[in-house]
Length: 107
Length: 110
Image (cartoon, rainbow over all chains, first blue to last red; front, side, top):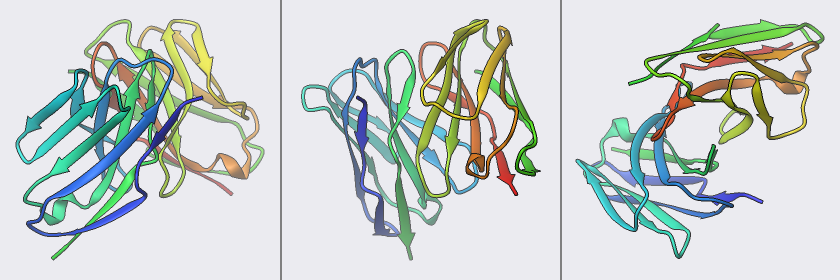
């Protein structure tokens, strides 16, 4: 079957750095995606990894290790507006989403 | 980029009533289309997936059905809603890279 795991909740302080981990076991792999979702809204695309390594995009970076079935999303210089759920997704021919990690940024 | 139109934004329906949610896509052709459901505080559950007109894959047995009558139109339906059908329904589309989402429909079955 398909299995994508993420921590349920995380808390961090404004200005800090936080790393959100994702492990996956899926039949088929065509890329690992991270989405941000604020409560009651649709998910928005953050980053995409198809090869091993780190992809940096401003305050957000994402890492992938295909051999380990592992990815993380790194958020730097946290801001209050970063409080949201972060969804890890694997694209096969379709998209399979993880349960999401609810991040709370405290002042 | 792609734009996903999904309506209505909110819906309150009695148990046993029918349902029809519509999603249309602009800015691409022959997209993959998806219907997801999200329970409060939970992740996205894939309900239906379509690679083309009339081609629908169902991920979980349920009270819902989907149809794709046109290339960029995807419809989620039910003949008789259950209380357990309440949730946040999201339509999504992708071609080669990331998935784009509609704004979602919050369905409450009472």
